Amino acid sequence: MPVSLPCALRRVVLLSALTLLSSPALAEEPITGTGATFPAKVYLQWAEDHTRLTQQAVKYLPAGSSAGVKAVSEGTVDFGASDVPLSAAELDRRGLFQFPTLVGGIVPFVNLPGLASGELRLDAPTLARIWAGSITRWNDSAIRALNPDLDLPALPIQRVVRSDGSGTTTVFVQYLRQAAPEQARAIEPDGGRARWPGNTTGADGSSKLVAAVKATPGAIGYASSDYTLRDRLTAVSLRNPRGEFVQPDLPAFRAAIVAGGLFKNGLAPTPLLGTQGAGAWPIVTATYVLVPSRPASVERAARTLQFFYRSFLLGDKAVAGTGFAPLPVATQARIVALLTGFRTRDGVLVPVIGLADPAVAR
Image (cartoon, rainbow, N blue to C red):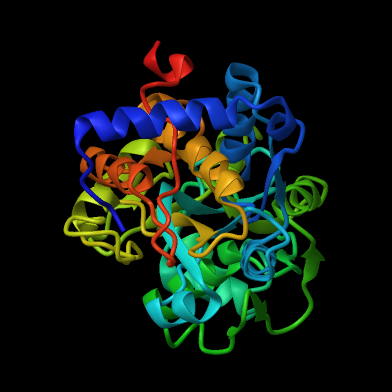
């Protein structure tokens, strides 16, 4: 959808958009989005900054990827968010356009007394056996073999899972079934959920899952990398396909981005699970935003795209300290160009504020 506009015409478009988007009437109605909890804290921070700097309110409700796809498809929100990209056929069927925003890791974490983050080492087969319910205690011989220097307790393993439709769950189960197919065979994907063998504790949303694990000695859960950083969770170290035990941090996510060639030749979704890069975290994924390709209101579409445009113009600063890695610079530039030339399916140009926005120009 990107188009090339003459400089003079672009200035007219931007100035028109500035007038349109500064309208007090529009400012009274927030732009709304819902969906993935994976990037929620970043989107909420972006929304707060955008509202403060532009007086254009944006509200985001983290409710799970499935809810985000459903809501934007039904037109009840201005944008949806999903950790699982939709296929071209599905986008066409739903009348949506999709673009990536962030890259992060999905992190297994535990509540084991006296254990520091990164001390517990697991490989894919052992992790899959834990989540499949075939390893039930923390002092199991398979876990001890990977951690000979740790005094592991005989606590029962309590698995805490997402009960809502979640892209985080989808990607995590994809990793287990890809990296350890035999051990993870009993874990069955179920849309944005999973059918876990045996007894598990369900939690609605990442925040409640994190709280449940922190309240339960012996528990294990999974969440996006920002929770690991901000909630000081006891993350595990994972063995990657090169045999290295790595921790979930920005260098490990960037290594996966480089090894996977993320969006190197376009914006088509790029697999980042189990890349062969040195030092790469094995459970890395991009997350995506969905907007209507034929919006009911061009004005609201313009304000929606402006919100993301401004965040991309801020570049790496927009995700600094969040626990996420920014998209490659070339990808950010491609999306910025795309958003400024976004046209509806009917051919209507959606005006988006760019450098004419003084908050961005600073």
